[in-house]
Image 1 (tube, rainbow, N blue to C red):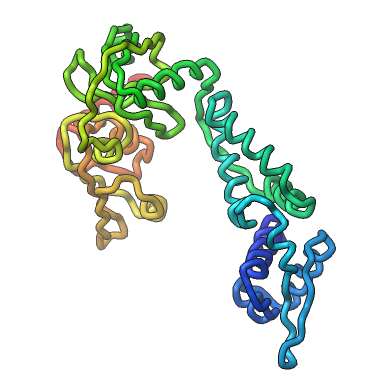
Image 2: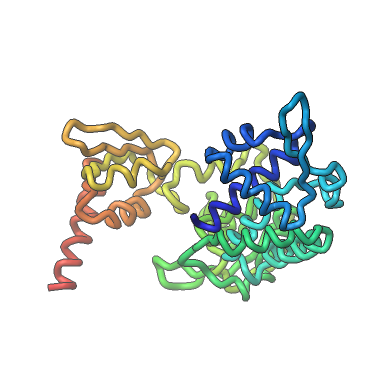
Length: 325
């Protein structure tokens, strides 16, 4: 049996005992963790050996397992064991933010929490860390962006314009921009500044790692009351915007399970076909990112519409054939 599975089951048992006022029978615990009563008895014994003050009580001829009330209040912070577990898991997820104020602050928070916990809690949390790991690749190194993050955050709060020097990939050059910063947005391992670009006179998205210089001006802007970064980003398949297009993609049966197990876009509609394939439909703002996504599926995905996207992908394929010829 995997150690991680055993540990997770024991956490569930502990949480049930902590939240129960009258204790739980082995039968109750077995049903909750979906395993044999003998396994639950072994888990309870292991928890007692680990130092958790678990005991039994007889009520009307039936045995109930309980945890001392003093133990329930042992940690001076208002967090349950499951909440602590979630925090530890969240810290691992935020490793992509190393060398930013967010990761540093979270690390400091964990150190403070750890000092307040009893030994048995710490022991379980450390084991939990070893058993559950989060893998995130690729990711960016934000060592040099602390200052930019802090400045943008201040500008968003103070509603002040920023002057930036920004490198545009498509044009391969730096340009000067005056921007009203509405939000900081974190997506797929990258920080973005979302705001009104005065050069283009429209809302634009700027990747932090392409901002070479940024200065806060003394000029105040008024952010539209109805602006929502979630609503602004909703039509996009990833980050960037473009002309709205309705896309239809046919996925071969071999890819159906993988496509169906995730929400790729909020507008998506998936229709089963008689031959075992599916048709994926979505209304997206710009097709550059969905083109890359479709090509990543290889021969398992074929664009049905729009025609312009089919032509773009065919052109890419022709270039690849020449490259590997």
